[in-house]
Length: 106
Image (cartoon, rainbow, N blue to C red; front, top):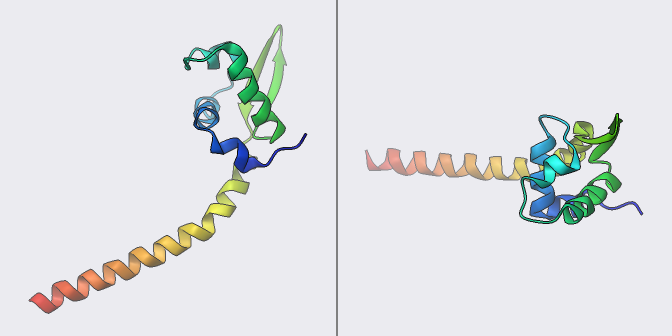
């Protein structure tokens, strides 16, 4: 089943997992050590992230390592860009207004 990428990042645990493996690939046990949940619960989160192609697994010997697919994060960034532009415009307008008020007081 292919899941939506935004379903994956909606969960705080999955966002934390993404943050953990952003710098280096990790095994499920290494990831689970950072949470107060069972190894099975972490595995479910890893499965969802894998189904969304946000992470991939790589077999090294007997261990499976999960790593972040940075290119897939670009989909999120593209979607967020529209809102970033809106907020930048609003902040620029607020700066202009505050400058105008400040100059009127002088």
